[in-house]
Length: 332
Image 1 (cartoon, rainbow, N blue to C red):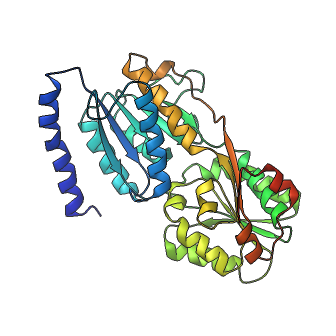
Image 2 (image 1 turned 30 degrees about the vertical axis):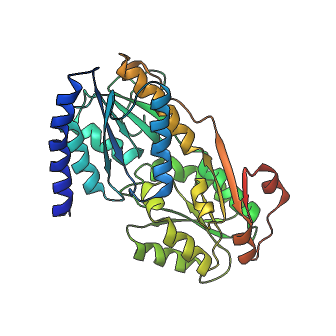
Image 3 (image 1 turned 90 degrees about the vertical axis):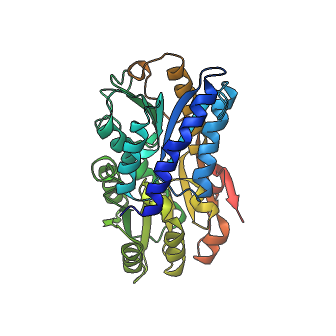
């Protein structure tokens, strides 16, 4: 449910726009950007990604408070808040909206088919119905793809490389926020599992209690492993996931480097900092007259691998040279 404090924040944000707009009339034209983040405002990684976006805008000549007004909304792991804040941002009639993730983009698409939307990162924009195609999106939405479907198989392959004893592996995600995981990632995950003679398991979770139940089940006997599917819910709840995986001796692989910095075993995936920074170029082009329909969906160009050697040692694992040689970051 949405609390009284959040409604007050929404009302206060609208009121704060009035004096800002009045002062803008005395100088250059002020453009308005909405930002919908499907993460907690206190999350240091998510704050770093948004900073990359803002830094990119600054380098392109846009400064919040001078020629730009940025309205930020942080929804955490709540689909309800995403929908509320999406409506709030659309009601403000910004020039363009930055949307993080699939659920945030879906919430905004429900509210507007005219205001330009730039998403980052989204896995399957065509399958999700956001765009008609990658070269020519064709509507009011464009942006940056994060993960290709084949990565799910690569994650499992890497997990068995660092933990060769894995015989059962669970793909874990929240079906409400990781809405493309079932059709987009699971086929690759299951196909790779069969080739590796690993039993594939699908673990659907909606709360910390369900996360605990899934990891506890994996840890009841040797051979369990965990593959985190791309999902903003998993990012928000990464602390208990990392703690429980360590507690129950379950090797786990994650999809971005922040998990490993927080104590996770291994990660591989696109550099989200780079994706958010690149998103600024699309927002800039739209503010200067480009149409989202004509801006092709772009793919990641930078990938990162990280391994936590301390966590590996605690799990009784030896990090193979093949992973050490590829790792961009090794945490001792």
